[in-house]
Every structure is written in structure tokens, then in C-alpha cells.
Amino acid sequence: MKDSSAGYRQLFSKIRLVIDHVSQGFSFIIAPHGSGMTVTFNLPGRVATALVILLIVFIAGIAFVGVTYTKLAFLALETSNLEAENDALREENKKITVLEEEIVRVDKIRRQIEAWAGIVPGRPPDGGAASAHSLIPNGWPRRYTYAIMKQFHAQRPLYPHGMMMPASGWVSRTFLGDDASKPMHPGVDIAASVGTPVRCALEGVVKSAGWDDIYGNLIVVEHSESLSTVYGHNDKILVKEGDHVTKGQVIATIGSTGRSTAPHLHFEVLKKGNPIDPELYVRFTSS
Image (cartoon, rainbow, N blue to C red; front, side, top):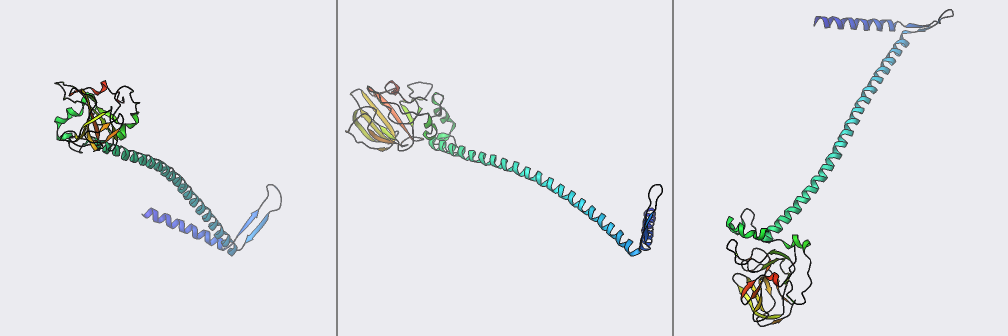
């Protein structure tokens, strides 16, 4: 502390000495190298003091401008870096927005599939694990939403000497005969949206048209003494018992009545009262 106090005292004494000299005035002497006349400029104390003050102000101004410019340069650099970071954040936000839209789209599709399949979130279909086996016949899920799978569907031409496909949609379950290892499925399921037209596969007479506890709104069409077709789970029945129907005539609309987990048409072919594989008569849309 004593050394610093002594240093300050020396500095102030030198400043005071300079001020005393300046206040007394001073002279500028210009002397050439070698021989020649010297020129002397005598400055009064007031003029000398004013020049010193101006010099100090000039040096302070230069220092202030330098410091200000340096700060502005740093601020400009920082602003440029922030703008670059903002641009990067905008790009990331765009990606996040796209991902959020995709998540919403996928979630919508998931909910559509659950609605079509009759799945209640958080609960296995049909209320337990025992139903899992019935959901995977032939290695495929039991129900597909037509809204998702319709891009794979192509309307097939009518058979000139056979049955036509009774509805436009996706074959979600095929015929499965009497097999001890798997539950029997006596027909073909065609998944489609509610209201899709159901057409008579072949000319015949409506043998029955009404409610069935299993197949819901059910239609049976007799084509000969030994051949009949069955149309189950309909939403609306458009014919009545005894009506003569032609091949391709709309007889109902697809629904989800009876024991059904999603909108679809259950189509059977009966020969002498026994179910046989409908693919023997109908060329269904292939996956």
C-alpha cells in the first residue's frame, strides 16, 4: 500500500510539473541539418495550454472511436452468429413441423385401422389373449381397412360363365375348411367401407332375406337345386324373399351387423348345403 501511494504521488508531481511548464509557455525550434538558419516559434502559456488540451481531446477521441468500433465489430460478429443459429433453428422447426404432421397422419391411420378392426385401445381384441389366434388366419390379420388397402385393389371383369366378385374391397380372410388345428371359416371376407354395394354373384332367386344372430342382416340366393350363395353382415338389405335377382344386381350394402368386428361382407358358396371354397367359382382380387 505504501509503494502504490508513493507511485501516485510521483505521477501527480510530474503532471503538476508539466502543467507548470505548459502554463509558462514554450518554444518550437526548427533547426536544419548542417549549416543554416534556425527558426523559433514562441508560444504563450495560454496558447500552449489550449494546444495541449486539444491534443488530449484528440487522443481521447481517437481512443473512444477505436473502442466503440471494436465493440461494434464484436456486436456485428455476434449478430451474424445469432442469425446463422436462427436460420438453423428455423430449418429444424420446419423438420419438426413435418414430423409432427407425419405423426398426426400415422396416428389417424392407426385409429382408422383400430376402428375397422374393432380394437379397443389398451384391451386385446375380443377381450383376451385367446382371440389372438383367430386374428391371424393364414398369416394375415383378420381385418384390413379398405381405406388403407384400396390402392392394391383393382376391379376384376365379370366371368362370362361363372360367379362375379360380390363386392369391391380387400379379401381380409379366406376360406378355411374343417381343420382341427385352426378354426373353420366357411367363406371369404371382403373388407370395405359401410355402404359399399353388395352384388349378386350369379342369377338366382332370394331364398331368405332377414336377420341372423351370427351373420346379422343375411341374404341367401339359390341358383339351382344344389348351389346357393350367402351374403352376411350387411348394413341394408335391398331385396326380399322370393325376388328374382340377376348377376351383378345390387342386393345389399356392406355393414358390420351380427357377430362382426369391422365392416365387411361374409360371402359363402353352398353346394348341396355344404360350404365349399368360393375361389372355385370366383376369381377374387389378388393381393
